[in-house]
Length: 227
Image (cartoon, rainbow, N blue to C red; front, side, top):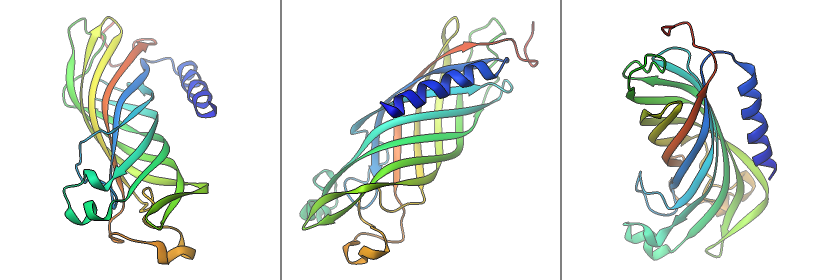
């Protein structure tokens, strides 16, 4: 509930802070994990993901963007194609809250005030910070610690968006996050528990969000638009 309140307050604050064209809305879809536990498919959602998104359309070709997404990452060795993982039989879950900020680039001018139908592919990147539960494996079972950490990362998102009706924009996107952490799955506990580490210590964890965005546009026409 505390995270939900933070999301609502942040989005309302952004709505009141800018006078140019804005978008505010929701993200809904799924997540999947790529690391030392579970399957290694890059796009294979196995848990629900939802959150909020805000964009400030700085021009017809780029926007500043902030999002907050909640999910529960899951990895199950039995779902892997690797016989060694299947034999090991580990599994984990980890509740995660991600904040991401960066810039979205469109391939085609996305001018919402032209009076014409608009649609375009887009790319998004920036920086992400994901808060997750620390954990480790003991006797082949995941143990959740009474502490949390932040995993910083780089989002790499590709999508397609279009005006749905009037002021509503529908988007479809797939986004991978490369993180600077190797312990989202409990495979690399802190330095005091090095004997509990396993997996490839040279590869950090990834996770992916796949889903839809639905945003509502509001605000005055920005200077790049035709009055």
